[in-house]
Image 1 (tube, rainbow, N blue to C red):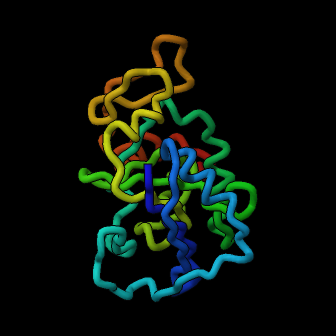
Image 2 (image 1 turned 120 degrees about the horizontal axis):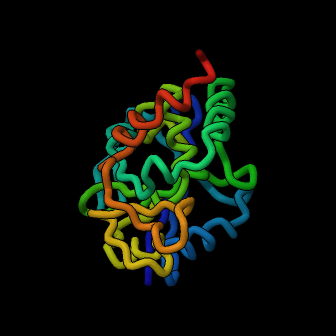
Amino acid sequence: MNKNIKICYPRKEMIYSFQKEVVAEDIYQAVKIIEEERIERINFDKKKKNEKRENGENEIEENEVRLGSIINLHNKEGICCLERIRNMVSCIENGKDIFEDGKWPNIKLAQMKEGLILFDGHHSLLAYMIAGKKYLSEIPHILIFNCNDSEIKVVFGKLDGDWKKEVVNWQASAGNELCIRREKNMDELFTSLHADICLRNE
């Protein structure tokens, strides 16, 4: 399949981005292909965070996308390491971002007609929200455009999950990984976990 994929890095009042079309079997392979780029050789586009551009087929306004509106694929029980989130929050509050292998955004999103789905980076996104970030323009991320239901199924592995009704919890026992969706977006997941994560401040 041909997929358009975009990488964004916010820096102060600017967003640096790189967009490319790749041929990949699924969304994970699309990310892997883009991460094989030599980052130091990439010619990044840049715009101001509040700058609007005419939206094309493969463009969104990051400054208008609330983090809380992003659709989750894990439930509260699937967030396995609260201490990891606390450590991430400390890094963010100290002016650092969360990267994979030190350079690639850990937050990976698929654009669907229903909205943006978070298929990787739930711990990281929760950490940014706890640290006070509100909009997509404030966080590094990878976005794959124009995905469909069959492409999201890869997140569930061999499980026959329906993301609209179910989420996956890889911490559950074998045969019980699929769970009924309770939290419909990151706002609701954040609310369900916020007290537990922030006990460090008690």
